[in-house]
Amino acid sequence: MQQSLNPWITSPAADGAEEEAPDAHVPPAAVISEPLRGMVEPDTADRLSRRTMSGSAALWITGAQGGAGESRIADLLDGARPTDHCWPVLQDGSTPRVLLVCRADMRGLTAAQSALTQWASGAAPKLDLLGLAVLADAPGKTPKALRDFAAIVGGGAPRLWTLPWVEAWRHGDTTTPPTGREYQRFINDLASLATDTTPRTTH
Image (cartoon, rainbow, N blue to C red; front, side, top):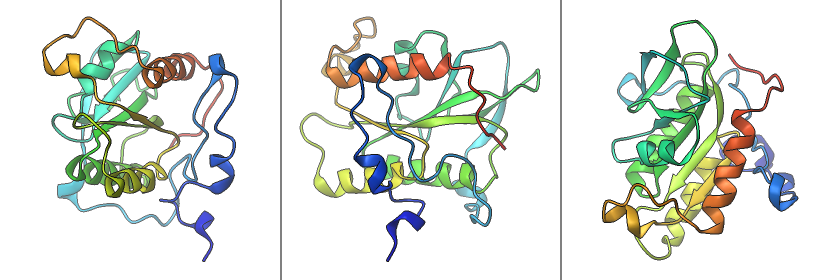
């Protein structure tokens, strides 16, 4: 069986190329980097809706489900705005750059997989999807079954970031940014991607 033909499995070649210069790290592209012909779109009930957004943003943060953490992530990134769990449609007709986020529980990962299937099938509006960020849903180590499922779901996104639990957020601290290596790398990655002027394929 050729795993490289499965769009929900990250390619082995990409896994081996993950480490780059610390100040220029961006997760490697997964198997899916743009919508695919022949991908079956999810049922209507499983799709994210679309919303016309006023104003502008360097990056739009779309939660796959309620409680995904899109507002938390938007607060971390300069020029980012949350979309309230909807695909953004811009009034001027330009293509928005979007980061999909979810929680690392079964509900969140399943919702993210449906959203990615919607995007990959071409059923989402025109957008430049940068990747998926999976936020820990509880302190401690994520169970192996959920880690494995997150890797499979992330294989359907252009890039995948897995982010640890932030205890300060539980206590309402929204002003102190996380200091862990994963978050610093994530913030640097998104800052680079959000300002990248290299043309990317969209649908």
